[in-house]
Length: 528
Ligand code: G4P
Image (cartoon, rainbow, N blue to C red; front, top):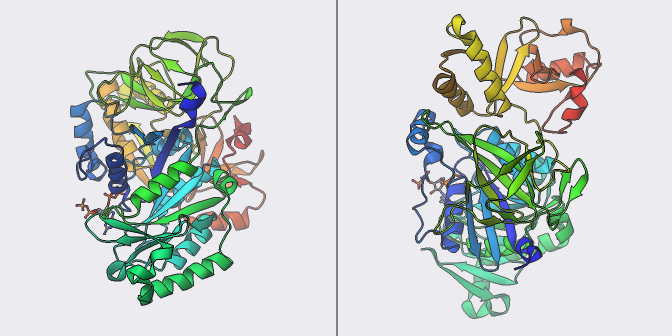
């Protein structure tokens, strides 16, 4: 098969949602369609995300590196599917955000009983920032949920993206009859027990459906959508301006396969990616890719790590020599790992869109570019993501300050956690997206650097970076704390929305940047 054909059939995506919306259940159904698992209810580590963090660490310690659940890769019809896991429960972290830089499209699950929830908003913003096409699956239709029209307007208002319902529920909860498939002009009747029946619109009366008042209501709503709804264009989906919306039930396996088939048809194949030399097309013969995640082994006896590389161009072959752009060193890639390959764990070849695991003897950093042959370019830097939780940190034993500094420096460089210094007293503050990052940090400082650390929680804070070149430092206090990040750029950690708003109203001359809204880190590095 030619490189072009391999690229055309790749679909690399992530599923984003708030915890409990149904990500595990949906993923399991997709793996079932792909014949990766024989029955549902069996996904390894299904509950991993629900363990308390300490349990999770025990598991990680026992099992070593848990890469198999991070990427799920399988053939399905004419496609080669790569699903990247985005940890969402207690293990929500910056890695979750970084993973989103390595996909070509995203499936967003919304719980029909809850609507758009906080974690979905954060993950959505990251996708938005990168212009990734987003497909929406509104789940749990077998339950009494919120009105479909209300859910759509919430998506449009809260997330600021237009929506196009590909299908429409006929009732819900107890009155749930099935879905009206606008896209394929058919009714999919819900029969319970993972069964569905497809009825072409022309045959509706034969089945007596048209007499049902719930169906009559649906027809009214469909008419409204046809008249007042958005127009569907492939281009707007590809640009991330319009999200195709599907209703269904992951648990009842209802509407899932139709969703998946349509999604694969419209989801983007591997796209050109930005480098310092302009865009690099996936069809470029020269192999290239970048590292978006490094997973350390929690077992102190094995210090090795696995680097996750997204293949961006050309063909990867095991044993090939690549150039690490940052250091201009040549490395032979022998120990590589595929994910969920049926009968081998070594990957022999990979194509754009694929993720490979590379054995890392502590030489890689997040964002590193690897290129077959001579290095000529590097992929754009990964964005800096704003942390939410902050803790002051110090070594319990001052005698250990040398190891303490070394440990922090390395773990921060690895992207495990973010480091800030309070301007007022030079104390060290760690910032993370999820609580687990602190626990992993504490564990690794002890295991790898033999340092016990002490945290003083600062709670949730809202970070904003300062764009203005000059400002008066007297304006800051403990509620709007002035800090410098690890690059030396100034940021402010606001105690809450109120202190942020107060500051915005009173300090108009100080320009602040929300890295979620405009990932304009270049703009703030002026303070370096
Ligand atoms: P997550 O990975 O997004 O956190 O969600 P997960 O799939 O674990 O689903 C969260 C809960 O919602 C689970 O119930 C799951 O069975 C349920 N669920 C998922 N899809 C549907 C659906 O379409 N309809 C209904 N009614 N429920 C759904 P649980 O009781 O927390 O776990 P379990 O013990 O049933 O596994």
